[in-house]
Each structure stands twice: as C-alpha cells, then as structure tokens.
Image (cartoon, rainbow, N blue to C red; front, side, top):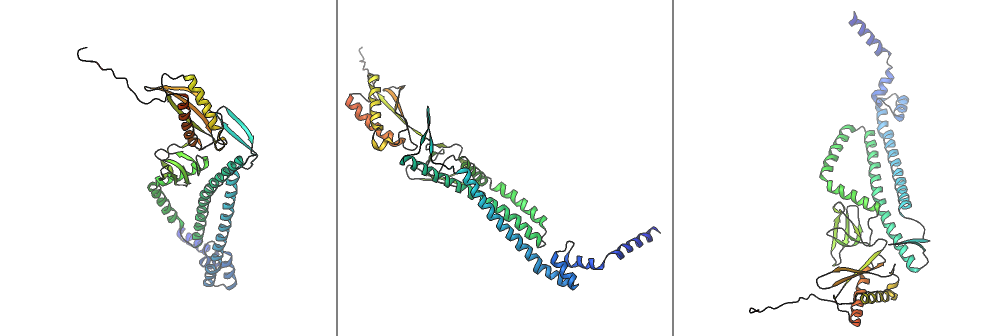
Length: 352
C-alpha cells in the first residue's frame, strides 16, 4: 500500500506541473532570459526561443559586459593617473628647503638657478609618477578584463570550475618558475614609490656605479664613468648609495711633511679654498663655506689634513679637482712640502 501511495503522490506532483513551464525550461534553461521568455510566450516554439536566446539575448549581454568593462577600465586608468600625480608631484614653487649639516633654512625661489633646479625636480617627479601609473594601470586593466572574460565565458555556457582550477595550478607553477621576475618587479615598484633614485642620479648599487639612465619595473640601467652600460635587476639591489640627493660633500685629504708648520698649512688651505669657491663658475654650487677639519691621520710618510665643502648634488668631483690643483700651486708658493714615500737607511760596516 505504501508503494502505491508513493506512486500516486508522485503522479499528482507531475500532474500539477504546468506543461508550458516545462517547455520554457527545456527551451531557455532553468533561468530563462527576458528575450527567450518573450519569444517563447509569443510563438510557443521552443526552437525559435532558443535561437533568439543565442542570437539576441546573449550577444546583447556580452556587448553590455564589454561596454561596461571598457568604460570601467578607462575610468580606473584616468583615476589612477590623477591620484598618482596628486600624490607624487608636489605643487608649489615658492620656497625650497636647503638641507645642510647644521643648517636648515627655507629660502625663496627667486633666482634662475633655483627655478632651473625646481624644473629638474618637477621633471623627475613626472617621470616617477609616469612609471608608477603605468604599473598600476596595467595591473588594474588585467584584473578588470580577467573578470570580464570570466563573465562572458559564463554567459556562453562554459563551465568555469575546471578553468579556474587550471588557472590556479598554472599560476602556482608560474609563481615557482618566475620567482626572480616577481621579486624584481616588486622591488622595482617599492624603489619607485620610495623614490630611492631617479634618472640622472649618481648611485652606487654594489658592483655597478654610475648615472641612472632608466628606471624600469624589472631593471635599472646605469651608465658607468667609463661608458659601460649596466643593467641591474632590481631584485639584486641590496643597498643603494645615492650621491645626488639634497647635497654632496667635496672631501680633500692633503699630506704635508712632519716638519711643516700645521698652523700655517691650515691658513693656506683655508685661504686657497675660499678663493676657489668664490670663482664665478663655482659660486652657485657652494652651499656652505669650506672647513679645514684639521689633522686626519699621522701616516708613515707625512701628516694628512682634511677639508670639506658642502656642494650642490653631483658637483663635488669637479670642485675637488679644482681644489687639489689650487692647493698644489699654493703649497709650492708657500714652500710647504707635499711628501712622497721616503726611507732612512742606516749602513753598518762589518768591522763595526
């Protein structure tokens, strides 16, 4: 009896199902679209409704997804550009802060040199902002279009579960195989965000030292003093020595003989350095007066005295050459001996 009762109840369920709903489900699926439903209700033809679904509704849906994605990508890229420029490029050219040891002053940008320096800084910030924007724009574009492709494939009836699983496996394999590339890109992004160096800076990256010609997401290109072009992967840069930020120091070490009058030597060094720094073609690069620090070492062949001059970034080497030449001429004129390696030899005869 129970068996017959169950069969009877099942039959009642099937009897209660509307044949039109079954036909609609067969033609348009469990979740019929608007076009498919309207065509089926108008024609009562499942084949025509299915064809209308494929030729009208799905192409329109795909076109809508494509259009929304394109607009979203355009808006996102433009928003990224504006945000990065607002954060990276600092506006205002009225004041400048000079960072000098023991001196921190704000001066007005009212000279041609200050305006030129500010223009160089502005160009550097623009290049940095462009690099960061390009990275963020590319990443955002790939992510948005990836989601759009998934939606379009789902609209076409493609089962996304195996595709997502395969993409996950491929991503893991690619991650293991491209660890160095990922490390280079991440390091390059942080270098750009932190502004560790820019185009035109003189940097020391370990084995490679030179002028930065290009800062990319994966590599940094340096031009050495001998003309060698170095391509340094950003992931291999463990420390950065930037010799072109804020200010530089011209360091001069000069040896004199042990019998020299150190007080007179310091006076000659100070006077000579003041005269050199007062020259017209060097005056604009000097940020602080020359300082004779005094005796640095007592070496085997002479006494080493040290002098420092705070200069604009990248101008210290030219000033050092000028100072060395002027010191040599001044010491010769003052009769101050610059020692060379010498030894005292004692000869002892066999009889003695």
